[in-house]
Picture (cartoon, rainbow, N blue to C red):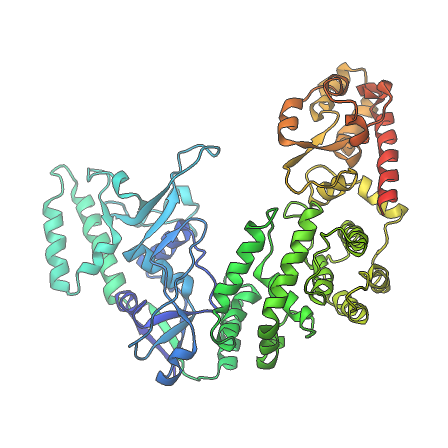
Length: 589
């Protein structure tokens, strides 16, 4: 079948009545500015690209989960709700065009809930529902200067506004709620309304403004009711694999989708009574928000872990989620969830969370190990658990600090899994040495040697790896319930040019400091509780240490020599502290 076209009004009427979204579609992500740009393009008669629909035959309608288009969007994202398609005939699922169709629905019939723009960033901002309005008095041949040049600027006076903030009609603006245009399903009704509105305009409105008023209203009416701007192709083949391939290709140049978004509908189909989309969304929310620490795992990480744990091909590709493999994942899903949660709980206990976990894939070998031992948590007090808790902590930290799983790591995961399968007894230790040999063969550094220590000492303030490295220099590692900040021991404001000059530093040394920023390196950093960090607030080292308990210096590996606590001995302080840190790291690893 070739392309057909219809008006926006016809498409809006079909949304959530005949047109729905498949589970492979991602969430609505357009912001108000993009919606306004779309409406401006339509008003100017620009093409808005074609759409791709998939028409389901009656007998296949209930085989696929369908979701409703969002009518009321919200800043930060809004999830689509499951649709009830009972009684729907000639149901079509939108494979390409979700963002545009949703934008039309939001602009014409719905709202966009955003924050007030005028409030300060550090102030809690309530959300307010806004609707799309058109200024009927604006000259449409002049672009909005605030939005850039003529190529990208907005020509029509479009804006999202809260109802209570819409200015009353005056001689400069006359704001018309765009959705009202849907009230006029005949041209006679529209013309009557237009003429009545013109009669209500203030007497001092100019003839030119009246012309703009009529022109803008007529253009909106024709854009919505007359112009057939929705050009679409309808795919009628009922083979899902073909449709999925079409979907991937159609969306290749648009808003990037995660692979999990493409796979969830397949899994939903194969998992029968379990709503896979809801199940996986819920599990991701649980491990990110409901465990000891906050995490930031993705659906893609969960799906890739499913492949590894079920001994399927490691590469995270759509073809590896065939019917047979999906059934294997379904059978093991509860065990996979348990292993993932136990692994995340364990690394959270080590102080590793969203702030310093630089590669989620580093946890997959641990998850596989725990999946072989359904009751093992490594949080207990038996000699086996205590010993392996230490093995795992050292291995995970070394792996992250050495960036083992950065970039492509499928071969390492595949070969590591082979090692783990050999060591599958309940009382078998975590095979860190065997996995490290795999890493070494891949050309990456597995062990924590002198070179690794030197690399760690070069880490700088603010990074995830820096936070992770700092957590390892403290002997009391039960840091899972505290909120720690990275802090400069020598306050960074001491290294401003004028202060260095006032302290007697020559120009060469000032230039070296300003270029290399040694105050930002690990040797000058420590972890403080949030309250401690506020108390310190730029205090000099000797003044700060005088307010701390006797064990503070030892805990933070601060050199005990007071002569090193002054700015003129900063280089010597860094050398001494880096020596202490290196010794602690070598002892740990």
